[in-house]
Image (cartoon, rainbow, N blue to C red; front, side, top):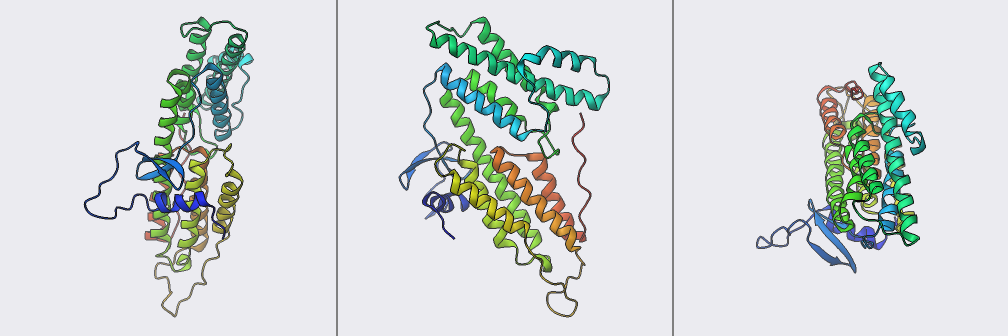
Length: 335
């Protein structure tokens, strides 16, 4: 299989994290930057992560970043939240009037979406005014309103679920406000920290899958597919969609996911060394395998950890190994 240069350096430094050549060497401090195979990388959580140039800290650059973060947010959350900012007052009224707890949670999530879009609308107008030569000060009333809309959206973010329905991703709701309120250089650095945590959790999930599935005779040969998928997922986590490598990166991720989903369990036997004394239900194992595939996919695309889903999935793997059965999936988070 063709592996591009960026994939090779990622495998060398990220898959194995930091390999120390001697006992006298030490782990570099978090945030250390090095040129590796001609590209700058930054060290967080044991991974050397691909860096990107920081744009000039202007209103125009922040506008583009906030617009991108808002699109990314709606791409990963439950459907129906992309309410136009022009309907903010309607969204407020609908949320205030709702008494049913379940529907109120959904309307709170819709209100959060309206706040985000209103903030983006305001920022867009501010940039247009600046382009016309009008000075925009940090204490401008519209700037304050924009910041308050982002803050209100972030507060309501706890009512929003990931598209999987399992948990929210609070980090996504806080990113536009941080992009608005801190220098772009600091914002980019905070993203590298989160990408390191994302890679760490992808490895945690993959390790749990390999450790548990390879002890079940029907799934004894699945480790290679799991590892390959996890490696491609970590590559995706560090690459932006605007990167010139995205065509190769995305194609590798999708095809690795397909190979894992199409894994065929080994035939079960009762009279040889591959016999399964615990009688693991193969259909449950296949479902659990695909749940792990989906969770890694979600995390890699969002480039943000999903701690609740990760913890519960690892627990389900252990239960399946011990009992041969898949426990019931957890219910969605309450409002």
